Length: 492
Image (cartoon, rainbow, N blue to C red):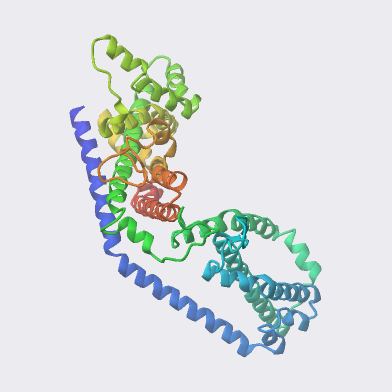
Protein backbone atom coordinates (compact mmCIF):
# COMPACT_ATOMS: atom_id res chain seq x y z
CA UNK A 1 0.00 0.00 0.00
CA UNK A 2 2.91 2.36 0.75
CA UNK A 3 4.33 1.66 -2.70
CA UNK A 4 0.91 2.43 -4.22
CA UNK A 5 0.64 5.86 -2.59
CA UNK A 6 4.27 6.59 -3.42
CA UNK A 7 3.56 5.74 -7.07
CA UNK A 8 0.34 7.79 -7.04
CA UNK A 9 2.00 10.88 -5.55
CA UNK A 10 4.91 10.52 -7.95
CA UNK A 11 2.49 10.46 -10.87
CA UNK A 12 0.62 13.52 -9.53
CA UNK A 13 3.93 15.33 -9.09
CA UNK A 14 4.86 14.38 -12.64
CA UNK A 15 1.54 15.77 -13.93
CA UNK A 16 2.04 19.02 -12.00
CA UNK A 17 5.60 19.36 -13.29
CA UNK A 18 4.52 18.69 -16.86
CA UNK A 19 1.66 21.16 -16.57
CA UNK A 20 4.02 23.81 -15.21
CA UNK A 21 6.44 23.21 -18.08
CA UNK A 22 3.63 23.42 -20.62
CA UNK A 23 2.31 26.58 -18.95
CA UNK A 24 5.70 28.27 -19.17
CA UNK A 25 6.21 27.00 -22.73
CA UNK A 26 2.87 28.48 -23.72
CA UNK A 27 3.90 31.98 -22.69
CA UNK A 28 7.45 31.50 -24.01
CA UNK A 29 6.11 30.55 -27.43
CA UNK A 30 3.27 33.07 -27.33
CA UNK A 31 5.04 35.78 -29.41
CA UNK A 32 5.99 33.27 -32.10
CA UNK A 33 2.49 31.77 -32.15
CA UNK A 34 0.90 35.22 -32.36
CA UNK A 35 3.22 36.06 -35.26
CA UNK A 36 2.16 32.90 -37.09
CA UNK A 37 -1.49 33.66 -36.36
CA UNK A 38 -1.17 37.19 -37.73
CA UNK A 39 0.60 35.89 -40.85
CA UNK A 40 -2.14 33.31 -41.43
CA UNK A 41 -4.83 35.94 -40.93
CA UNK A 42 -3.02 38.25 -43.33
CA UNK A 43 -2.79 35.53 -45.98
CA UNK A 44 -6.45 34.72 -45.49
CA UNK A 45 -7.47 38.36 -45.96
CA UNK A 46 -5.26 38.65 -49.04
CA UNK A 47 -6.72 35.49 -50.59
CA UNK A 48 -10.22 36.72 -49.76
CA UNK A 49 -9.66 40.03 -51.55
CA UNK A 50 -8.06 38.29 -54.55
CA UNK A 51 -11.07 35.98 -54.80
CA UNK A 52 -13.56 38.83 -55.07
CA UNK A 53 -11.30 40.75 -57.46
CA UNK A 54 -11.23 37.65 -59.65
CA UNK A 55 -15.03 37.35 -59.49
CA UNK A 56 -15.35 40.99 -60.59
CA UNK A 57 -12.92 40.58 -63.48
CA UNK A 58 -14.37 37.33 -64.81
CA UNK A 59 -18.05 38.11 -64.22
CA UNK A 60 -20.53 39.67 -66.62
CA UNK A 61 -22.37 42.98 -66.17
CA UNK A 62 -24.88 41.46 -63.72
CA UNK A 63 -22.11 40.13 -61.48
CA UNK A 64 -20.23 43.43 -61.56
CA UNK A 65 -23.36 45.46 -60.83
CA UNK A 66 -23.89 43.28 -57.74
CA UNK A 67 -20.91 45.05 -56.19
CA UNK A 68 -22.91 48.30 -56.31
CA UNK A 69 -26.58 47.29 -56.27
CA UNK A 70 -27.36 44.13 -54.37
CA UNK A 71 -29.55 41.68 -56.26
CA UNK A 72 -28.40 42.82 -59.72
CA UNK A 73 -27.02 39.38 -60.53
CA UNK A 74 -30.30 37.76 -59.52
CA UNK A 75 -32.33 40.19 -61.60
CA UNK A 76 -30.06 39.49 -64.60
CA UNK A 77 -30.83 35.74 -64.29
CA UNK A 78 -34.60 36.30 -63.83
CA UNK A 79 -34.41 35.37 -60.13
CA UNK A 80 -36.78 38.18 -59.23
CA UNK A 81 -37.69 37.18 -55.67
CA UNK A 82 -34.05 36.70 -54.63
CA UNK A 83 -33.10 40.00 -56.27
CA UNK A 84 -35.88 41.84 -54.42
CA UNK A 85 -34.77 40.29 -51.12
CA UNK A 86 -31.14 41.39 -51.59
CA UNK A 87 -32.17 44.87 -52.77
CA UNK A 88 -34.52 45.28 -49.79
CA UNK A 89 -31.66 44.41 -47.41
CA UNK A 90 -29.46 47.08 -49.00
CA UNK A 91 -32.19 49.74 -48.91
CA UNK A 92 -33.03 48.96 -45.27
CA UNK A 93 -29.36 49.17 -44.34
CA UNK A 94 -28.96 52.55 -46.08
CA UNK A 95 -32.13 53.83 -44.35
CA UNK A 96 -30.83 52.61 -40.97
CA UNK A 97 -27.40 54.18 -41.41
CA UNK A 98 -28.84 57.56 -42.48
CA UNK A 99 -31.38 57.90 -39.68
CA UNK A 100 -29.74 55.97 -36.83
CA UNK A 101 -26.59 54.02 -37.58
CA UNK A 102 -24.25 56.93 -38.39
CA UNK A 103 -25.19 58.70 -35.16
CA UNK A 104 -24.75 55.47 -33.20
CA UNK A 105 -21.26 54.96 -34.63
CA UNK A 106 -20.35 58.57 -33.78
CA UNK A 107 -21.69 58.08 -30.25
CA UNK A 108 -19.67 54.88 -29.93
CA UNK A 109 -16.44 56.82 -30.36
CA UNK A 110 -17.42 59.91 -28.34
CA UNK A 111 -19.58 58.18 -25.67
CA UNK A 112 -21.68 61.34 -25.58
CA UNK A 113 -20.94 65.04 -25.71
CA UNK A 114 -23.62 66.72 -23.55
CA UNK A 115 -24.91 65.13 -20.38
CA UNK A 116 -27.62 65.61 -17.75
CA UNK A 117 -27.40 68.91 -15.88
CA UNK A 118 -29.56 71.03 -13.55
CA UNK A 119 -31.15 74.10 -15.17
CA UNK A 120 -31.50 76.97 -12.68
CA UNK A 121 -34.19 79.61 -13.16
CA UNK A 122 -32.91 83.15 -12.65
CA UNK A 123 -34.17 84.79 -9.47
CA UNK A 124 -35.51 81.53 -7.98
CA UNK A 125 -34.18 78.44 -6.24
CA UNK A 126 -36.04 76.17 -8.64
CA UNK A 127 -33.99 73.73 -10.72
CA UNK A 128 -35.07 71.37 -13.45
CA UNK A 129 -32.93 68.41 -14.54
CA UNK A 130 -32.28 68.48 -18.27
CA UNK A 131 -31.60 65.10 -19.83
CA UNK A 132 -28.60 64.76 -22.12
CA UNK A 133 -26.56 61.92 -23.55
CA UNK A 134 -26.20 58.57 -21.80
CA UNK A 135 -22.73 57.07 -22.24
CA UNK A 136 -23.99 53.54 -21.62
CA UNK A 137 -26.67 53.86 -24.31
CA UNK A 138 -24.13 55.41 -26.68
CA UNK A 139 -21.88 52.39 -26.15
CA UNK A 140 -24.74 49.91 -26.47
CA UNK A 141 -26.24 51.42 -29.63
CA UNK A 142 -22.74 51.70 -31.10
CA UNK A 143 -22.16 47.98 -30.58
CA UNK A 144 -25.57 47.25 -32.15
CA UNK A 145 -24.63 49.40 -35.16
CA UNK A 146 -21.33 47.55 -35.57
CA UNK A 147 -23.14 44.19 -35.45
CA UNK A 148 -25.69 45.45 -38.01
CA UNK A 149 -22.84 46.52 -40.30
CA UNK A 150 -21.18 43.12 -39.87
CA UNK A 151 -24.47 41.37 -40.70
CA UNK A 152 -24.94 43.56 -43.77
CA UNK A 153 -21.42 42.74 -45.00
CA UNK A 154 -22.20 39.02 -44.68
CA UNK A 155 -25.31 39.48 -46.84
CA UNK A 156 -23.43 41.77 -49.26
CA UNK A 157 -20.77 39.20 -50.06
CA UNK A 158 -23.40 36.45 -50.10
CA UNK A 159 -25.10 38.46 -52.84
CA UNK A 160 -21.85 38.57 -54.85
CA UNK A 161 -21.23 34.84 -54.45
CA UNK A 162 -24.79 34.08 -55.45
CA UNK A 163 -24.46 36.23 -58.58
CA UNK A 164 -21.16 34.54 -59.48
CA UNK A 165 -22.60 31.03 -59.01
CA UNK A 166 -25.65 31.90 -61.10
CA UNK A 167 -23.39 33.25 -63.87
CA UNK A 168 -21.22 30.11 -63.87
CA UNK A 169 -24.31 27.87 -63.97
CA UNK A 170 -25.73 29.82 -66.90
CA UNK A 171 -22.48 29.38 -68.86
CA UNK A 172 -22.60 25.58 -68.59
CA UNK A 173 -26.34 25.53 -69.26
CA UNK A 174 -27.36 24.32 -65.81
CA UNK A 175 -30.89 25.19 -64.74
CA UNK A 176 -31.01 27.93 -62.11
CA UNK A 177 -33.14 27.32 -59.03
CA UNK A 178 -36.31 29.39 -58.83
CA UNK A 179 -37.60 31.11 -55.70
CA UNK A 180 -39.91 28.15 -55.08
CA UNK A 181 -36.97 25.76 -55.38
CA UNK A 182 -34.95 27.76 -52.86
CA UNK A 183 -37.91 27.95 -50.50
CA UNK A 184 -38.59 24.23 -50.82
CA UNK A 185 -34.93 23.45 -50.15
CA UNK A 186 -34.95 25.59 -47.01
CA UNK A 187 -37.76 23.50 -45.56
CA UNK A 188 -36.37 20.20 -46.81
CA UNK A 189 -32.69 19.29 -47.09
CA UNK A 190 -31.57 22.72 -45.83
CA UNK A 191 -34.03 23.01 -42.97
CA UNK A 192 -31.09 23.06 -40.58
CA UNK A 193 -30.20 26.49 -41.99
CA UNK A 194 -33.58 27.86 -40.86
CA UNK A 195 -33.20 26.41 -37.38
CA UNK A 196 -29.60 27.57 -37.03
CA UNK A 197 -30.53 31.06 -38.24
CA UNK A 198 -33.13 31.43 -35.48
CA UNK A 199 -30.64 30.14 -32.91
CA UNK A 200 -27.93 32.43 -34.29
CA UNK A 201 -30.13 35.50 -33.88
CA UNK A 202 -30.79 34.53 -30.27
CA UNK A 203 -27.08 33.93 -29.57
CA UNK A 204 -26.11 37.28 -31.07
CA UNK A 205 -28.85 39.19 -29.21
CA UNK A 206 -28.53 37.55 -25.80
CA UNK A 207 -24.91 36.34 -25.69
CA UNK A 208 -22.62 38.07 -28.18
CA UNK A 209 -24.04 41.59 -27.75
CA UNK A 210 -23.91 41.62 -23.91
CA UNK A 211 -20.48 39.97 -23.98
CA UNK A 212 -18.98 42.58 -26.33
CA UNK A 213 -20.65 45.35 -24.33
CA UNK A 214 -19.21 44.16 -21.02
CA UNK A 215 -15.74 43.64 -22.53
CA UNK A 216 -15.73 47.21 -23.83
CA UNK A 217 -16.58 48.53 -20.34
CA UNK A 218 -13.06 47.41 -19.35
CA UNK A 219 -11.61 50.05 -21.67
CA UNK A 220 -13.56 52.93 -20.10
CA UNK A 221 -13.50 54.72 -16.73
CA UNK A 222 -17.10 53.77 -15.84
CA UNK A 223 -17.52 53.80 -12.05
CA UNK A 224 -19.48 55.64 -9.35
CA UNK A 225 -17.60 58.87 -10.13
CA UNK A 226 -18.06 58.57 -13.91
CA UNK A 227 -21.67 57.51 -14.37
CA UNK A 228 -23.63 56.86 -17.53
CA UNK A 229 -25.63 60.09 -17.33
CA UNK A 230 -22.62 62.06 -16.11
CA UNK A 231 -20.45 60.65 -18.88
CA UNK A 232 -17.53 58.24 -18.97
CA UNK A 233 -14.68 58.07 -21.49
CA UNK A 234 -12.37 55.61 -23.21
CA UNK A 235 -9.12 55.01 -21.28
CA UNK A 236 -7.53 52.22 -23.31
CA UNK A 237 -5.56 49.63 -21.32
CA UNK A 238 -5.29 51.77 -18.21
CA UNK A 239 -7.52 49.44 -16.15
CA UNK A 240 -5.43 46.39 -17.06
CA UNK A 241 -2.34 48.28 -15.93
CA UNK A 242 -4.02 49.03 -12.60
CA UNK A 243 -4.67 45.34 -11.95
CA UNK A 244 -1.51 43.65 -13.22
CA UNK A 245 1.01 46.53 -13.19
CA UNK A 246 3.60 47.26 -10.55
CA UNK A 247 1.37 49.74 -8.71
CA UNK A 248 -2.25 50.13 -7.69
CA UNK A 249 -4.41 47.07 -7.33
CA UNK A 250 -1.72 44.61 -8.44
CA UNK A 251 -0.93 44.05 -4.73
CA UNK A 252 -4.46 42.70 -4.42
CA UNK A 253 -4.88 40.99 -7.79
CA UNK A 254 -1.93 38.60 -7.57
CA UNK A 255 -2.66 37.35 -4.01
CA UNK A 256 -6.30 36.79 -4.95
CA UNK A 257 -5.25 35.04 -8.18
CA UNK A 258 -2.82 32.84 -6.25
CA UNK A 259 -5.48 31.80 -3.73
CA UNK A 260 -7.98 31.23 -6.55
CA UNK A 261 -5.63 28.80 -8.32
CA UNK A 262 -4.66 27.08 -5.04
CA UNK A 263 -8.32 26.72 -4.11
CA UNK A 264 -9.20 25.35 -7.56
CA UNK A 265 -6.39 22.77 -7.37
CA UNK A 266 -7.32 21.61 -3.86
CA UNK A 267 -11.06 21.63 -4.48
CA UNK A 268 -10.71 19.72 -7.76
CA UNK A 269 -8.08 17.09 -7.05
CA UNK A 270 -8.93 16.37 -3.40
CA UNK A 271 -12.57 15.83 -4.33
CA UNK A 272 -11.55 13.74 -7.32
CA UNK A 273 -9.07 11.37 -5.69
CA UNK A 274 -11.09 10.94 -2.51
CA UNK A 275 -14.18 10.30 -4.64
CA UNK A 276 -12.25 7.69 -6.65
CA UNK A 277 -11.04 6.04 -3.44
CA UNK A 278 -14.58 5.98 -2.04
CA UNK A 279 -15.95 4.48 -5.27
CA UNK A 280 -13.26 1.77 -5.28
CA UNK A 281 -14.07 0.94 -1.68
CA UNK A 282 -17.84 0.76 -2.19
CA UNK A 283 -17.56 -1.25 -5.42
CA UNK A 284 -15.43 -4.01 -3.90
CA UNK A 285 -17.18 -7.33 -4.32
CA UNK A 286 -16.94 -8.26 -0.64
CA UNK A 287 -18.63 -5.02 0.53
CA UNK A 288 -22.17 -5.66 1.78
CA UNK A 289 -25.03 -3.26 1.01
CA UNK A 290 -23.35 -1.33 -1.77
CA UNK A 291 -26.60 0.40 -2.80
CA UNK A 292 -27.23 1.55 0.76
CA UNK A 293 -23.75 3.04 1.05
CA UNK A 294 -24.13 4.85 -2.28
CA UNK A 295 -27.50 6.22 -1.20
CA UNK A 296 -26.04 7.39 2.10
CA UNK A 297 -23.30 9.43 0.41
CA UNK A 298 -25.61 10.77 -2.28
CA UNK A 299 -27.82 12.37 0.37
CA UNK A 300 -25.48 15.38 0.38
CA UNK A 301 -26.38 15.90 -3.30
CA UNK A 302 -30.11 15.62 -2.61
CA UNK A 303 -29.94 18.50 -0.15
CA UNK A 304 -29.69 21.90 -1.91
CA UNK A 305 -26.12 23.13 -1.74
CA UNK A 306 -26.95 26.55 -0.34
CA UNK A 307 -28.77 24.88 2.57
CA UNK A 308 -25.69 22.80 3.44
CA UNK A 309 -23.38 25.79 3.16
CA UNK A 310 -25.52 28.09 5.31
CA UNK A 311 -25.89 25.31 7.89
CA UNK A 312 -22.12 24.79 8.02
CA UNK A 313 -21.63 28.51 8.45
CA UNK A 314 -23.94 28.48 11.48
CA UNK A 315 -22.38 25.33 12.94
CA UNK A 316 -18.82 26.67 12.69
CA UNK A 317 -19.61 30.29 13.59
CA UNK A 318 -18.50 32.04 16.77
CA UNK A 319 -21.91 31.55 18.38
CA UNK A 320 -22.68 28.20 16.78
CA UNK A 321 -23.13 24.87 18.59
CA UNK A 322 -19.49 23.79 18.12
CA UNK A 323 -18.10 26.91 19.81
CA UNK A 324 -20.78 26.60 22.49
CA UNK A 325 -19.46 23.12 23.32
CA UNK A 326 -15.96 24.62 23.55
CA UNK A 327 -17.24 27.24 26.02
CA UNK A 328 -18.96 24.60 28.12
CA UNK A 329 -15.72 22.61 28.18
CA UNK A 330 -13.94 25.65 29.63
CA UNK A 331 -12.18 26.72 26.43
CA UNK A 332 -12.09 30.05 24.66
CA UNK A 333 -14.49 30.28 21.74
CA UNK A 334 -13.05 31.93 18.67
CA UNK A 335 -14.46 32.97 15.34
CA UNK A 336 -12.77 30.63 12.87
CA UNK A 337 -13.85 32.86 9.98
CA UNK A 338 -11.83 35.81 11.32
CA UNK A 339 -8.53 34.08 10.54
CA UNK A 340 -7.53 33.77 6.89
CA UNK A 341 -5.89 30.36 7.23
CA UNK A 342 -8.65 28.68 9.25
CA UNK A 343 -11.29 30.21 6.97
CA UNK A 344 -9.56 28.80 3.91
CA UNK A 345 -9.21 25.38 5.56
CA UNK A 346 -12.93 25.37 6.42
CA UNK A 347 -13.83 26.25 2.83
CA UNK A 348 -11.74 23.36 1.47
CA UNK A 349 -13.10 20.83 4.01
CA UNK A 350 -16.73 21.83 3.50
CA UNK A 351 -16.23 21.58 -0.25
CA UNK A 352 -15.07 17.98 0.26
CA UNK A 353 -18.35 17.20 1.97
CA UNK A 354 -20.29 18.72 -0.91
CA UNK A 355 -18.16 17.52 -3.85
CA UNK A 356 -16.89 14.00 -3.12
CA UNK A 357 -20.25 12.28 -3.85
CA UNK A 358 -20.23 13.62 -7.43
CA UNK A 359 -16.79 12.13 -8.10
CA UNK A 360 -17.87 8.89 -6.43
CA UNK A 361 -20.93 8.53 -8.68
CA UNK A 362 -19.02 9.26 -11.88
CA UNK A 363 -16.23 6.85 -10.96
CA UNK A 364 -18.71 4.14 -9.97
CA UNK A 365 -20.26 4.28 -13.43
CA UNK A 366 -16.82 3.95 -15.04
CA UNK A 367 -15.82 1.02 -12.84
CA UNK A 368 -18.97 -0.88 -13.82
CA UNK A 369 -18.16 -0.47 -17.52
CA UNK A 370 -14.51 -1.53 -17.58
CA UNK A 371 -14.37 -4.84 -19.54
CA UNK A 372 -13.94 -7.74 -17.12
CA UNK A 373 -11.79 -9.69 -19.60
CA UNK A 374 -9.02 -7.11 -19.16
CA UNK A 375 -8.75 -8.01 -15.48
CA UNK A 376 -8.95 -11.71 -16.30
CA UNK A 377 -6.12 -11.41 -18.81
CA UNK A 378 -4.05 -9.48 -16.28
CA UNK A 379 -4.57 -12.16 -13.63
CA UNK A 380 -3.47 -14.86 -16.07
CA UNK A 381 -0.31 -12.85 -16.75
CA UNK A 382 0.36 -12.75 -13.02
CA UNK A 383 -0.51 -9.11 -12.35
CA UNK A 384 -1.43 -8.16 -8.78
CA UNK A 385 -4.22 -5.85 -7.64
CA UNK A 386 -1.92 -2.83 -7.47
CA UNK A 387 -0.60 -3.44 -10.98
CA UNK A 388 -4.13 -3.90 -12.38
CA UNK A 389 -5.19 -0.66 -10.76
CA UNK A 390 -2.24 1.28 -12.21
CA UNK A 391 -2.39 -0.30 -15.67
CA UNK A 392 -6.15 -0.80 -16.20
CA UNK A 393 -8.41 0.96 -13.70
CA UNK A 394 -6.63 4.29 -13.32
CA UNK A 395 -6.00 4.86 -17.08
CA UNK A 396 -9.67 4.19 -17.84
CA UNK A 397 -10.83 6.50 -15.08
CA UNK A 398 -8.43 9.25 -16.16
CA UNK A 399 -9.43 8.91 -19.82
CA UNK A 400 -13.16 9.23 -19.17
CA UNK A 401 -12.93 11.86 -16.45
CA UNK A 402 -10.24 14.05 -18.08
CA UNK A 403 -12.76 16.54 -19.54
CA UNK A 404 -14.74 16.36 -16.28
CA UNK A 405 -11.65 17.34 -14.30
CA UNK A 406 -11.07 20.34 -16.56
CA UNK A 407 -14.70 21.37 -16.19
CA UNK A 408 -14.49 21.02 -12.42
CA UNK A 409 -11.27 23.02 -12.26
CA UNK A 410 -12.77 25.91 -14.23
CA UNK A 411 -15.97 25.62 -12.22
CA UNK A 412 -13.99 25.92 -9.00
CA UNK A 413 -12.14 29.00 -10.28
CA UNK A 414 -15.60 30.55 -10.68
CA UNK A 415 -17.19 28.83 -7.66
CA UNK A 416 -19.11 31.78 -6.29
CA UNK A 417 -21.60 29.95 -4.06
CA UNK A 418 -19.34 28.14 -1.62
CA UNK A 419 -17.14 31.18 -0.92
CA UNK A 420 -19.93 33.73 -0.72
CA UNK A 421 -22.27 31.62 1.41
CA UNK A 422 -19.58 30.34 3.80
CA UNK A 423 -17.26 33.29 4.33
CA UNK A 424 -18.58 36.09 2.12
CA UNK A 425 -14.99 36.44 0.87
CA UNK A 426 -13.74 37.41 4.34
CA UNK A 427 -11.98 37.95 6.58
CA UNK A 428 -11.61 41.52 5.36
CA UNK A 429 -9.08 44.13 6.33
CA UNK A 430 -6.13 41.92 5.36
CA UNK A 431 -2.84 43.72 4.77
CA UNK A 432 -2.27 44.51 1.11
CA UNK A 433 -5.83 43.71 0.03
CA UNK A 434 -8.14 46.49 -1.10
CA UNK A 435 -11.31 47.35 -3.01
CA UNK A 436 -13.51 44.75 -1.30
CA UNK A 437 -11.13 41.75 -1.45
CA UNK A 438 -10.85 39.47 1.57
CA UNK A 439 -8.76 36.56 2.76
CA UNK A 440 -10.91 33.93 0.97
CA UNK A 441 -12.03 36.05 -1.98
CA UNK A 442 -11.79 34.39 -5.38
CA UNK A 443 -11.55 36.44 -8.55
CA UNK A 444 -15.28 35.95 -9.13
CA UNK A 445 -16.32 37.02 -5.61
CA UNK A 446 -13.99 40.01 -5.81
CA UNK A 447 -15.62 40.91 -9.13
CA UNK A 448 -19.04 40.69 -7.45
CA UNK A 449 -17.89 42.99 -4.63
CA UNK A 450 -16.47 45.48 -7.12
CA UNK A 451 -19.73 45.56 -9.05
CA UNK A 452 -22.31 45.83 -6.26
CA UNK A 453 -20.42 47.28 -3.31
CA UNK A 454 -17.81 49.54 -4.89
CA UNK A 455 -19.66 50.15 -8.18
CA UNK A 456 -16.25 49.96 -9.86
CA UNK A 457 -17.62 48.62 -13.13
CA UNK A 458 -14.48 49.31 -15.16
CA UNK A 459 -12.24 47.14 -12.97
CA UNK A 460 -14.95 44.51 -12.54
CA UNK A 461 -15.13 44.12 -16.31
CA UNK A 462 -11.33 44.02 -16.53
CA UNK A 463 -11.21 41.37 -13.83
CA UNK A 464 -13.82 39.34 -15.71
CA UNK A 465 -11.65 39.38 -18.84
CA UNK A 466 -8.55 38.31 -16.90
CA UNK A 467 -10.52 35.52 -15.21
CA UNK A 468 -11.61 34.28 -18.63
CA UNK A 469 -8.00 34.37 -19.89
CA UNK A 470 -6.78 32.32 -16.90
CA UNK A 471 -9.61 29.79 -17.33
CA UNK A 472 -9.08 29.49 -21.09
CA UNK A 473 -5.31 29.02 -20.88
CA UNK A 474 -5.59 26.39 -18.15
CA UNK A 475 -8.38 24.54 -20.00
CA UNK A 476 -6.56 24.45 -23.34
CA UNK A 477 -3.22 23.39 -21.88
CA UNK A 478 -4.75 20.72 -19.67
CA UNK A 479 -6.97 19.19 -22.33
CA UNK A 480 -4.25 19.29 -24.98
CA UNK A 481 -2.00 17.10 -22.83
CA UNK A 482 -4.70 14.83 -21.40
CA UNK A 483 -5.24 11.22 -22.47
CA UNK A 484 -8.78 12.10 -23.59
CA UNK A 485 -7.34 14.03 -26.54
CA UNK A 486 -4.17 12.03 -27.24
CA UNK A 487 -4.96 8.35 -26.65
CA UNK A 488 -8.58 8.00 -27.72
CA UNK A 489 -7.85 4.99 -29.95
CA UNK A 490 -6.55 3.02 -26.96
CA UNK A 491 -9.98 3.05 -25.28
CA UNK A 492 -12.26 2.25 -28.21
